[in-house]
Amino acid sequence: MEEVIFYAFAALSIGSALLVVGLKNTARALFLFFIVLFAMAGLFLFALADFVAITQILIYVGGVLILMIFAFMLSNKELLADLQHTSAQFLSLPNAQSLLLVLGFLGVMLYGIAEWQENTPYWITENIRRGNTIQPTDNNINQLGVKFMTQYVLPFEVVSIFLLMALIGAAHLSRKEEDR
Image (tube, rainbow, N blue to C red; front, top):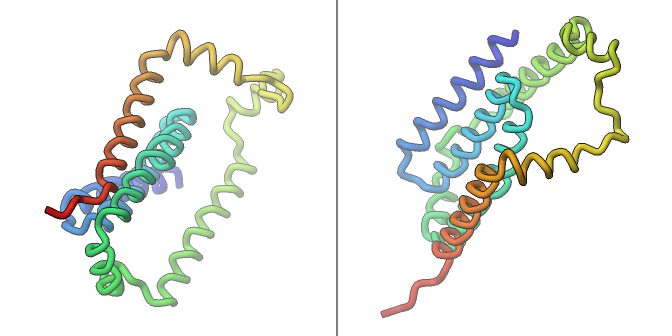
């Protein structure tokens, strides 16, 4: 089942990325880019890079992509009006197909929960037995802060510059052009 989910995330990310590059409609490309970023976060989870997956969602999906959508919505009123007229033609599913898709996702989630409870990985049960677990009273924020300001200061600053560039780009795209 893990392989099926992994390949589903991989196919979703590759397929959506190809559509992002190929589409001429910017609004649809932005929303497909949203799917690409979430699928990549899922692949990071399979690589046991939980922190990178959460960072991917927080920074790229929560920050950069929202700024891009915001700038697009402010700058391209004509494209949004065109999108409303053609929205029924792009990946619209009838109610029965949508219901089947939702039930399929629910089945995969329930199967994953049942498998996890039956076959908890060895490394998790061993760490629970040894007492090497993070307790709710543990303070990991201090350790993360020290790591960010010592060992990971360069990637931390690169991400902050990237977010600043995205903010400046969104502000530039959203400004109104002067009539000449």
